[in-house]
Image (tube, rainbow over all chains, first blue to last red; front, side, top):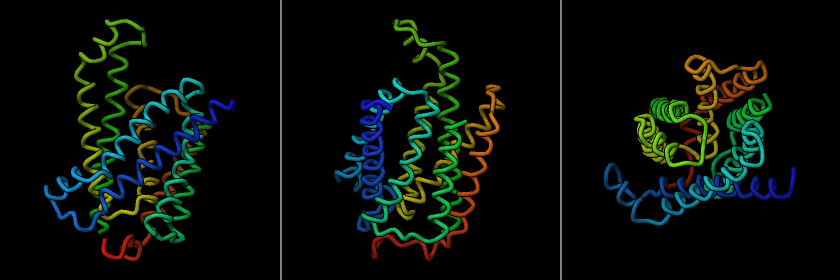
Length: 118
Length: 131
């Protein structure tokens, strides 16, 4: 792996994780209400737009990443995002690590990596 | 809550898969990338492009609805069922070759999702105390 590939990989994990955390922060505001009011409240707060910005940045980084390595390798390396979002969810939103969650998410990350290998 | 997750993820998978299949149909319609205006016109002129965008929008609203209750870590992991669905559909619709390794990886993903499905939702439905 060249340094440039490593940099794009790191940026991809960062933007993807950041985007998902921002979306979770937008979606989980307890005072946002329900139905249309909830969507309006989300649109008026910064989190959803921060999330969108992260995903736009990720889109660009992913394109750059894939211009240097094959898609299968991209999928393989991208499986780390699952682990990153899992850890960040525990850290920032106090999400529980139940045994089933840890086993399930680890299997999924492994499975995605294996599909990338194939 | 189980019902909310089940329906939510089914809808999410449908939108995600629709988007990927339509992108591929559109790419087949447009042909291999060439840096000219005619290629761009072919990309934006087929209806598949717009179905793909509609699929993205549908996914977004479904995902934000799911995240109201779902913990983002396991939910993001579970959304990777899309990889399996798209692999299987690409075999039937586009005649893509599936390797044994890919099939094994898909089975591992499905096993992981089965584990998440057995995670007790009420106990697991935590997040912030008021959320």
